[in-house]
Length: 371
Ligand code: ADP
Ligand code: MG
Image 1 (cartoon, helix red, strand yellow):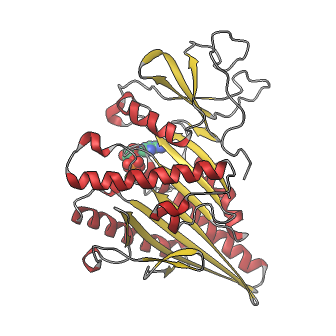
Image 2: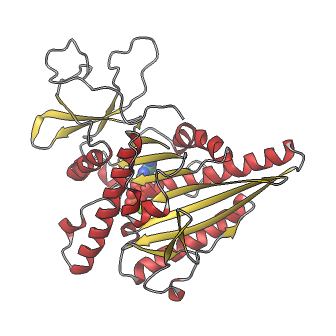
Image 3: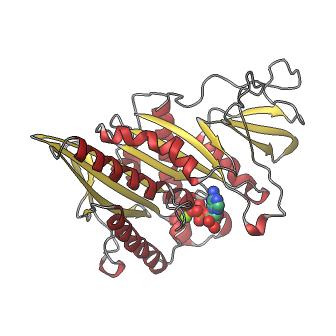
């Protein structure tokens, strides 16, 4: 199991045009040695308590406002497709405060250029299926099926089931030979991108309806799409799953609303996100114990239990109104790697000869293995 943590800073929205941009990108090799500019892998943000200081967080990769949907797919997702076809599971998370671009990253907009990770992933899967079928002259059969569910208040709801047919208790989960399965979850075959998109859009309508019914915004549930790929050649069958997860908003709901329902929601959101952070950290440090059983989401995804790949997108808004939430997102994803440096105008931040810098960056960040 390996995990990449990738930060993505969204552009300013229309109503933010006049706001301060306080979140910036940088790279550890501040002094570019050659002609090529080093790729950003550091996010900088001011210390809210002391404007003279900034915090720096190192990730596997960092994307700024100028990055396109295509850039994200090409650099972070396309390399995982090969692994999926080799029989490994792939898990893609979007983590962040509501309004930072999780849904934009995962689902994206309607136009071709704005399509997010999910439609691009499916498109790439189908393209590869066609190629394998052709190259094997039909000897390898490929089958794609999807399930789509949400976890709200630690309960699992099938997004293929219309909201009025669901029971409040949600679907039961069960252990099945060491793997956790959701009982009664609908699985729909989808053989073309068009078919997938139709089913996906239908299920997304169920998501928003149920959110209204439960008197909760969809930002309080985790939406989990699972794409199961089955490859059969003779009597050999290889099954692997790509999961794409639009997580519940990571903001502290208690700050804005204090009613009982919100407390229950934020309690279960906080717990599952906390366990997720622990799993990500344990996997990245190659620890033998991954606490995946401690929340329903990490348990169902069996996070850390196989040789799969995980990519976590950390979505960030660049403006001051998100300052504290942004810091807490950065801390969530990179708790052990916070570095404090003095703010130095127009100077590369991590120049070791610079006497003003209080610390230099420590060693490698979370699992720097290339995919
Ligand atoms: P979240 O799902 O985290 O609540 P959204 O994906 O809904 O956030 O994004 C909030 C708003 O910002 C939306 O209007 C979305 O279109 C816009 N947005 C987010 N990321 C980008 C981006 N990279 N480029 C352009 N617009 C973006
Ligand atoms: Mg969203």
